[in-house]
Image 1 (cartoon, rainbow, N blue to C red):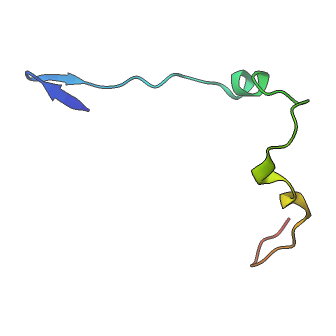
Image 2: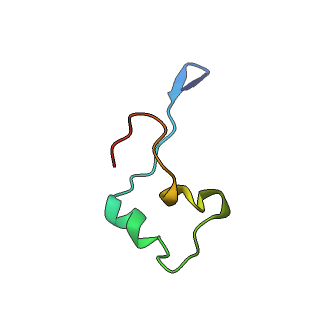
Length: 49
Protein backbone atom coordinates (compact mmCIF):
# COMPACT_ATOMS: atom_id res chain seq x y z
CA UNK A 1 0.00 0.00 0.00
CA UNK A 2 1.19 3.49 -0.82
CA UNK A 3 -0.30 6.77 0.34
CA UNK A 4 0.09 9.61 -2.14
CA UNK A 5 -1.54 12.92 -1.19
CA UNK A 6 -3.96 11.17 1.14
CA UNK A 7 -5.11 8.66 -1.47
CA UNK A 8 -4.74 4.99 -0.65
CA UNK A 9 -3.48 2.97 -3.59
CA UNK A 10 -3.56 -0.81 -3.53
CA UNK A 11 -1.97 -3.02 -6.15
CA UNK A 12 -4.40 -5.45 -7.76
CA UNK A 13 -3.35 -9.03 -8.04
CA UNK A 14 -4.34 -10.88 -11.16
CA UNK A 15 -6.86 -13.62 -10.49
CA UNK A 16 -5.70 -16.99 -11.76
CA UNK A 17 -7.59 -20.22 -11.58
CA UNK A 18 -5.89 -23.59 -11.41
CA UNK A 19 -7.27 -24.39 -14.87
CA UNK A 20 -5.65 -21.21 -16.27
CA UNK A 21 -2.27 -22.09 -14.79
CA UNK A 22 -2.37 -25.72 -15.90
CA UNK A 23 -3.35 -24.64 -19.42
CA UNK A 24 -0.08 -22.65 -19.60
CA UNK A 25 2.05 -25.71 -18.80
CA UNK A 26 3.96 -27.49 -21.54
CA UNK A 27 3.88 -31.18 -20.65
CA UNK A 28 6.46 -31.91 -23.37
CA UNK A 29 9.06 -29.51 -21.94
CA UNK A 30 12.22 -31.12 -20.54
CA UNK A 31 12.79 -31.17 -16.80
CA UNK A 32 14.81 -28.11 -15.64
CA UNK A 33 18.48 -28.84 -14.87
CA UNK A 34 18.13 -27.82 -11.21
CA UNK A 35 15.28 -30.35 -10.76
CA UNK A 36 16.97 -33.31 -12.47
CA UNK A 37 17.35 -36.28 -10.17
CA UNK A 38 15.19 -35.00 -7.33
CA UNK A 39 12.60 -37.71 -7.87
CA UNK A 40 15.31 -40.36 -7.39
CA UNK A 41 16.65 -39.13 -4.05
CA UNK A 42 15.99 -40.78 -0.71
CA UNK A 43 14.30 -38.93 2.19
CA UNK A 44 16.69 -37.17 4.57
CA UNK A 45 14.27 -36.51 7.39
CA UNK A 46 10.77 -37.64 8.22
CA UNK A 47 9.33 -37.13 4.74
CA UNK A 48 6.63 -39.53 3.69
CA UNK A 49 6.05 -40.08 -0.03
